[in-house]
Length: 249
Image (cartoon, one colour):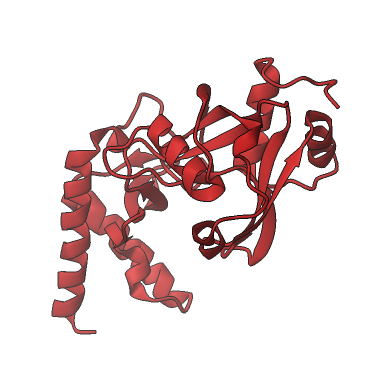
């Protein structure tokens, strides 16, 4: 790649970075005592970028590994590489994922009127495996957490919310991803539950529904049959708030 092309690539990443900073200024603050200070001046960014690029090339990696700014984006996430100053004053970079939706995504724990909890078996591309989960998904533009929860419940389980209770926010991976997602408990009429996923749900990788008693859910959690962080977090919050019964069979 020519020097001109490299400069153009870096300039494009920084232009997107400044646009993101204007839309989401809260993501670029440097609070008092912050361990990693984001460098927002071009001189500091260039110095950090050049140092990381040299180290990357020496390690057999592409020199673009030092680019500062929005280095990738799609409809769901932006991959952002910040120039930072570490506690020992060394300059470098830190990478993070920023969701496109300001409100984040949502997950919802479906509680039937007969006391059972509904799980779905979902195939996940990231680890190429099946997981027992609750419905969850990304937020659409302009959609709040409750709207996302209700939509995901309809899309993945074909159920309409009777009552929605906010459980709290969860930070899925503070080491990589910015922002929080929101967790809810939905009370659902048992008669609504169908035996098998809809065609739309199957296309998303869902092949089975399972309605379990609260005791069975507790056993699945204790037996490590559930590994999905959203499901475990929603379960913990619902238990702590007394919305599920520890001794319910």
